[in-house]
Image 1 (cartoon, rainbow, N blue to C red):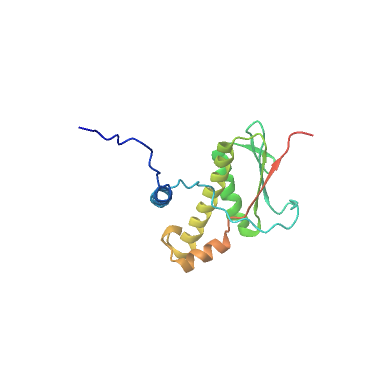
Image 2 (image 1 turned 135 degrees about the horizontal axis):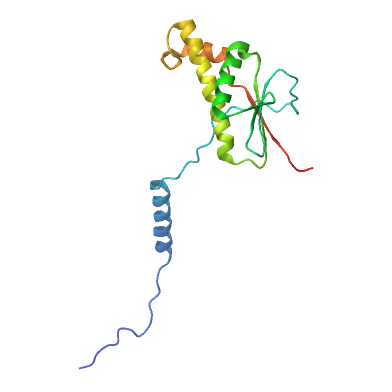
Length: 166
């Protein structure tokens, strides 16, 4: 009995359908996978109008390379900064913005701590104003009254990095 050799030659392999399957798998995994979204600081930046000079109209906060906090050239701790900002913003209203200057050697966490202190103080001032004006906390106000308080006490923070090299 004769046996046939089935492996006489290699048959050609059709690579067209294989490329289609690979492409479909690629699309499938792209559609079904989730991507991590980077979270940042939600801030609305004003339009660039050249270099802004502080002519005494803004509350000046500086965080130097030694991690010292200066509010209008007075050394403070983070909790003291919060209390002083609430007092300044309550007394002076929205006429003054906040100017934040930091050294370029400051860590991101130190910067965020100061920025968070500014946001918390503005939030407290908004709560105080909404309690006195509407008799309710800021979180419980309707959108119309909330926008009135936000217009009275906007979050106006200008930022810059101070270079320590000459």
